[in-house]
Length: 439
Image 1 (cartoon, rainbow, N blue to C red):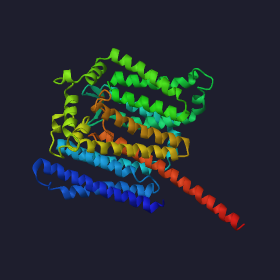
Image 2 (tube, helix red, strand yellow; image 1 turned 90 degrees about the horizontal axis):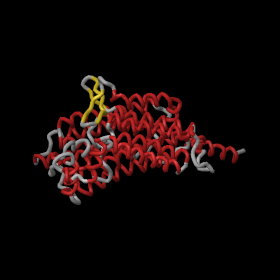
Image 3 (cartoon, rainbow, N blue to C red; image 1 turned 90 degrees about the vertical axis):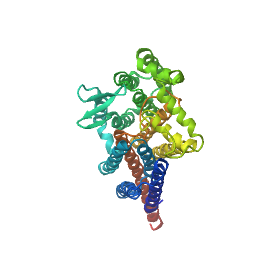
Image 4 (cartoon, helix red, strand yellow; image 1 turned 120 degrees about the horizontal axis):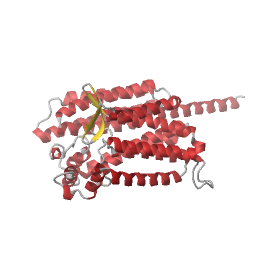
């Protein structure tokens, strides 16, 4: 596919996303006040303008990049904004600002990172930065404990979660480290019952770090996300299924230790197993979310016609339940399909990448989105214990939006580098063939 059709396809999808988002915004207003919002025109113009900025940046800076990721992310972001505005207008204003900053972060990433493989040289800098960001909420002055989890940092009037950006910086470090140590780490399973101590060390370190995050910050979601990220990337880098077994054992040990030692972990598991006996207390949020999903049925009550405001933290942890009530099974299925498109596209980018670092980084970044989506949707639907992390691009949260738009830009950069490299090889082969024909 040539450059123009790919970008034209992206532009067409962006226009469609803007129309869908504006239509959903209008329906939300009709369901709430039986009148069209007065700002529907400016709202549509702002959506188109923000997505157009991102599109132009891709067209200029990564013209051979994937054409699906940006429109799908824009659709998720737009739908999330509609429901946040439906639930809380003050949060909607902040989310609009964070969306604009996320688009700027997307453009800045494409400007700064001109070649994805350049990131490999700064592996240990990214490691230090990631650890620093992860530990920042534990600082005595700026760290904040909100809703029982110490995940937040307050700098002046701004609250943010540094762990959201830490997942990307640590993902870059993991990719670079595993490419560097791949031969050593792969020396396992060929007549050896156990890996070398130098190979098992990083796994134990990642496991210990995840336990530290869970105990010190009381954050089950980030702990599970970071450990799953490292184990999955380790498996992809070495093609040794035994590491998955080791990871499963360590996960089981860590889970048992956490359940036995920490009351907040034990409470989350007990609520997961039986929220109904605690429906008036600790299980209230989960029960209200399940009622919302149930009342939505197949087609939903309609945007603006449900009662998602009865769910605590509906704009953040439980936005999937709010969407399920008003869009029903069809709406939530479409939402999951959108995430599957992002994950599938990211894995396709990883498969096509020829450089080991780019291949592993693309797979790791995609794993972050996939695992985080599974954890939060699984928590709302009682597949796994509730952890309280955000639904990428959909939930309210500035830190999450910034990090996910940076992640999106890196995936597009990798896809662009791969396509341009293949174009050069194809041109060289064509030129060589022409030379032989005229030689």
